[in-house]
Image (cartoon, rainbow, N blue to C red; front, side, top):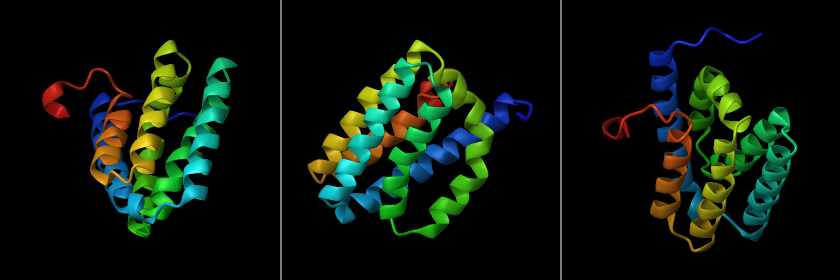
Length: 145
């Protein structure tokens, strides 16, 4: 069962999710190791494969796995608590994006995040992760970002 979609609520939840993922990434990058990077790469490969197969549920799981590496490495359990609240509110937007060609953009966005993480660039990776989450809703104006 999917909750009714209120654009204002979804937009608000998307802003919170993007901010939490940005914060998580900023704190996670210095804590990442080679295994963490490999885990993100594997999740992104599963994500790309699921998108190619039009497997929206598989894409959602792989996307969640990708971002969970950074949230976990942030060592801030409150970020995860906030995301547990807002993620269901944006799940429909994720489903819509991952069932369309626009979802393929996230594979490249994830790869760019991985490269910034590998380089130890906390700010660059955080900004890219924020943009990745804001791209769920192309109707957000530039001023909203």
